[in-house]
Length: 264
Image (cartoon, rainbow, N blue to C red; front, side):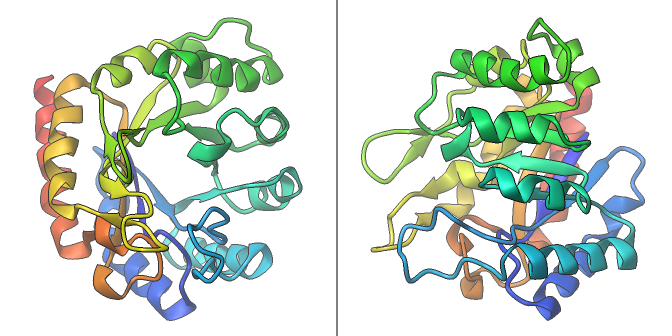
């Protein structure tokens, strides 16, 4: 099972290293293909005044330090084409943010790198239309058909993170997991799926209590991996705190989805 976990954004060195230390248990678990995740820049925050992160160069230096210290494979977001090559020199997976999942130049640039490409489904997207985002990566990497096996060979994942539903809320249609899995391995982003965009007056809110139930449901449907943003104290996190799991809650959730996955 792919497991992507880490803080939403790189807040500072001490916090990143503290969280990374707590995730060591997953690196040695032979049931899990573990990736440490943190963003060097949150370029789509609700407010101009919100914390964005240390930026590309400083952020990649800290991620490289995490790799050297713990040996983790790494995942981070890229928002613009000029960030791709430098990020791909450090990380194993380049993530395309949900709002940018149709950005052709960004998808093609990521596909030209050596990294795995993880495309998050836009909150506004019909899951069936993710076939065309997948094809932008696949064709760049020499594959003509959007199939699960081709995407696995090409190093392409698709991630479900919920769909817009009314005002300031998201809903997960579990059918989307099956639909997108026709095109590529699918990761379920359980923490962003419970986000409430703009729900806290100039920043996003969330419903952390629904993370574990939705993750269990996705495991029962069948997915290739899970994405959990986590923090030692989400109440002080500088981005997405209300929808992040506490580190001490993560292990029980991961163990349960592993158990359900074995039965599915």
